[in-house]
Amino acid sequence: KAGVTQTPRYLIKTRGQQVTLSCSPISGHRSVSWYQQTPGQGLQFLFEYFSETQRNKGNFPGRFSGRQFSNSRSEMNVSTLELGDSALYLCASSLGSSGGAYEQYFGPGTRLTVT
Amino acid sequence: GENVEQHPSTLSVQEGDSAVIKCTYSDSASNYFPWYKQELGKGPQLIIDIRSNVGEKKDQRIAVTLNKTAKHFSLHITETQPEDSAVYFCAASKSGTYKYIFGTGTRLKVLA
Image (cartoon, rainbow over all chains, first blue to last red; front, side):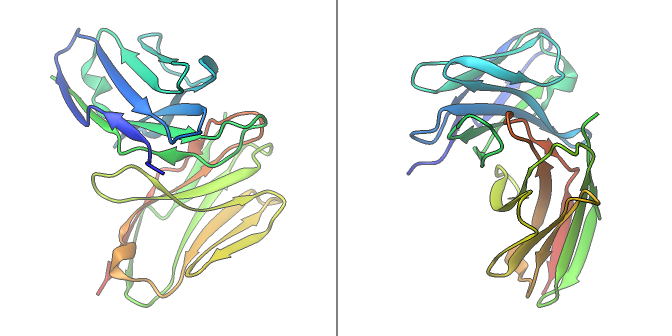
């Protein structure tokens, strides 16, 4: 099976712009979670989607949003970019069974640099 | 709030020696504890996990132990090899959510 794919792998944006990142989960997986990884804050949970619905949300401002499509692919959007949004954005896929607490498999990430 | 503490932040061992990384979680409702290995330029890779109904789990040179009473869990790597060099993260999660709370990571260096 192919793993989790994320596009693009690298992105450079200017402050104030917006950006959209894409994630394709492992075939058959219906849950997609997004994490932000920075040297200072580590790995932080952004949100999780299952069957096109957001099931969980972390403590990030409303500038961070996401969505999931009927084929389980997911996108996350960051509007009005700030320098502090520079990070590695990771997508993780899981079967998504009810009850949670199951294995998540990560993609390679999208490295976003805001200048 | 939910928190996972991880120690040490860096660890250097000689090839062939053992390495131990420890984590403590705060939410007593946590019942799933995965460990990830992250190499430079890559996403985290799941290497082993344990659920709260099990005290220990082993997979070849890697083992994880869980002490629910103390809210501690640990990763043990035996017979370390240079390719074990990476950053290791512990995490905690609980039923009903796919939200992982991650530790701050341990940079393991295996010296040949």
